[in-house]
Length: 542
Image (cartoon, rainbow, N blue to C red; front, side):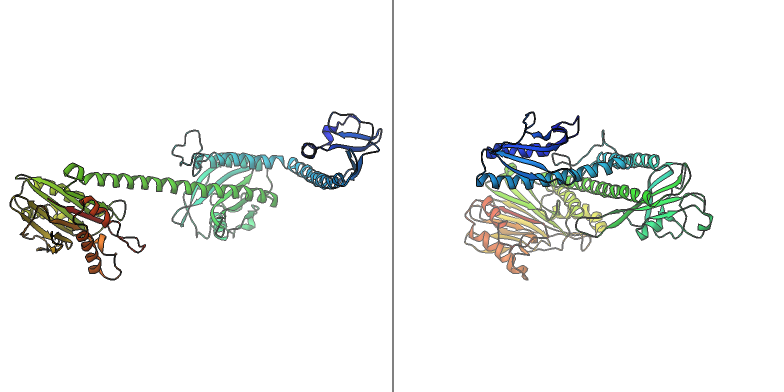
């Protein structure tokens, strides 16, 4: 111990902590000594205690250090086997701790030698850390940039600091666009230069060359370099240039170049060095991760926006469909499950003067947003004409006239069934425009197909629609309507078998409440497959 040094200054804090832990955990009376030029042995531990020398009845063992004198570890209270074993463990721990402390001291010295560069990297890390990240601490995406940098602002701040530290006249940051064809200027500082996009395959541009090859390039500014690609914003042979690729390495993929970082000219003359290139490459690596993160943020926010819009569209479409509660849940049940967020299947219920009930089902030939548009127009037209027309055929006639232009422009068609049940007359009057899955399930378990009399709307142009009447037993009969998405993939390779399975399911449950019947249809075993079409079912008993 040199004059003026205290035990606290000589003992690293981690060593004191470890000795304290051993002392408490194993109830050991530990002491640590170090040779001293003036005192023989100086007492280092426990801190604050003064002791002249180790006791004769204690167990002592030497502890070597990498660059200092050996220390003496003393365990008071005897020299039995447990004490000896504990001393060896403590000795090994102290050796490693002092080795680590020495390495920390060495690296601290290295860091202090490169303070300006390290400070620059740290400042850049803070700046990049201020960019919006993919998710907040609570797991939600960042929506607002308030009090947070955007990429262009952060890039300009980084370039300003880099140019100051590396004494560059100009700095520019170029990023490849999503199409993979052009490099765009994200930020620049210093003297004026090129701002228009650069094609990634431009043979005359340094930025494009560095991007393509993925290797750094240093130009000295000599006139004899006139036959080489030049900086994109300076005439040949005027200024030294340092250009490094901005690369990003995904966790599970190969590195890729996403942009280029350029420094042009030196404020105090001279060239860029290999050391400058190494520092700028480290900065470019940080920037590359930030650019990739920024891309992921944009994609995440875009996906979230699209997802939210799809959810809103789905909710809106479901609200267009009538509910059984608003009609008569004891008499009718229905459900629609779009294959995507929105679809082209729909149903409608109507109360018609004379205690009659109208029910409609429709299936647009596609699904997704285009089909959803036709579906909304069809429901609107059905609501208008069902309240005005006297017969199902007339309703379909008016709907076909109003939807002709939309169906032609979208190249879609629409299968449609509309039936009116008159309990007093014991009759079901219906019109069917190409809808294949419409059945009257009779009280004795027979299934009568309500066949299509006309083609789907949108296939044959203007059509004169027809209607047909069948007997109806109010107490016993069920009207079953569904779309092909419910049945087509039930039995692999056989649409007919799938339809038969749906019909048999309803026949077997014909005495159950209609809501149970509909629920059972959507629980039919599909063999683990995922349907690619909208599914709809309507069951009515009146």
